[in-house]
Structure formats: C-alpha cells, structure tokens
Image (tube, rainbow, N blue to C red):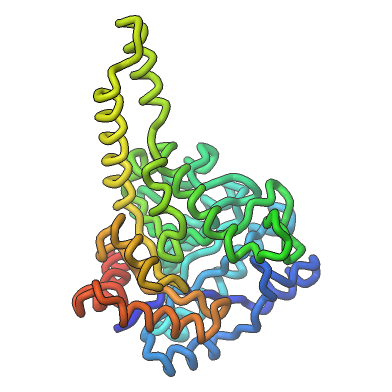
Length: 337
C-alpha cells in the first residue's frame, strides 16, 4: 500500500471565499483547480492507495469568527470524503490559527469525534511561528492525544495576508514557494527546538515537508546558545579568564551532537525533493523510519508526483525495505498509533 501524506484539497467553498478576497495564488502559483475525483483518478494512474488530505491555506484572510467557521466547513468536507472513500482518503484538520482558543476547539472536535488523522498547521500563522508560547494550549491538547501535526510551509508576511503572487519574497521575480517556503520551514523547526517543544510536548508527531529543506545545512546552528553563553560567563566569573579553547570546543561539539539527536524526533516528507543530493542530506539527519512519501498534489501536479517517485525509486542508498517503509509502512505506523 502506498500512502501519500502530503496531498491537498481545495473545496470549492474555500476557493470561492479566497477569490472574493482577491486571493488567487498561493506561494506565487495560481490556485489549481481541484476536485476529489481528480485525486482519485491520479492515484489510480500512479498506484497510490491512500492520500491524507490537507488544505495549506492561511485562514486569517477573514476575521476570527469567520475563520473558525471556514475551518469547520473545510473539515466537514474532508470528513465527508473519508466517509465516502474510507480506503482512499484520510485528512488532517484545518485550524483557524492564530485564534488559539478556536483552534483548540476545532482540533479536539475533529480528532475526538470526526476521524481526523491529525491536524494541519502552517510554519507561521500571521507571524506566529511554530514553537511560539502562545500555541502551548494547542500543543497541550495535541500532546494528550499523541496527535500528528502536519506543518506546511508558508511565507512570512507578519500580520498581513499574502495576496499578491510575490508577497513574502524579497525578490519579486523569485516565487515565494521557490525559496521562502523552505526558509520558513527551517525557521519553524528551529523555533520548536529552541523553545523545547520536543521536550515539553514529546508525544506530538510533527511532520515537515520537502525533505527537510534547509534544515540539514543549518542543523549545527540549532543550538541552545543561551546555555553556552551562561557557561562561558560563569567560567569567566570563577576564573577571571575565558575557558580554554579545548573546553569550548568540547561544549560546542556536545551541543551539536544534542541537536543531531533531537532532530530525529521530527518526520519529513519527500514532496518534490528527491534529487540524490537532497536525499543524501535528509538521510544524514534522520532515519529512514522518519521519512514519508508525499506528492504536494495538485500544487505539484502529476509531473511533480512522478518526479518524487522516480527519485525515491532510483536513489542508490535506499534498500527495497527502505522504499517500502517510505512509501507505505512509516505513514501507516504514524497514523495508526
């Protein structure tokens, strides 16, 4: 069984509401036309057995009460898809963040009563990043339920809503999804680690996308620098001189080793990111048991899906067992816990 963990839905009511508010693109790309049958047809053509639906759309284009209603409508649509095609679809529930109180209510309702496989969030919601203490009440509820939290990239636009196709990119000719999505995912991962979310809420299963984007390149920087500075300052206070360089090097190496260990808590999907150098970097930081198959359909279109599959199937360092885990077993285990 092949499971696509990163598969999007765009209910007509959501697209109509976005259009009414002059939002016709996401990440610089036009919103694609989508219907459930298009996903099923594509899945049949490419031998994908099951897809987990999510809507990667910031909902703060409307006021909080309307956003809460919109999230409920999206989740009702997704739930209906799972009831109609129980073997083909699951869904990650949309949440009306940054309204944390409403998000908690929607998360608990969909997880406890309406069959959600987890929740979908963004790297930041109106400038509030994953790991922000304001999200702790939501994390508490997700942790109680050992919930999956699928985190999709977006752009940073502070409290503004990204309406124009270049919003969120400092270089207008570079689409935000091309670089900024990866940068924002990296910021979110960094903030989760630096705010100790993995230690305070260890039972949440966070899934990030696109083979960890920039994380492997900056993992050595995702350190608790405050602790290092405190140790440095304390040594000067006690001895009147800075610590010897060998001692500093040992502390730095220990901090880097800790970061490498903690990153293994996360899961990452492979959507549109299976070139050999990318998979080299990903497998250097996480075990293959934490790598999941994702396509980003329909945003990535069928060519993106095929590119992703071809990369997994041709990567020389994957065994047949690795491919089975990535394409099916890892997601099944994650969703069935």
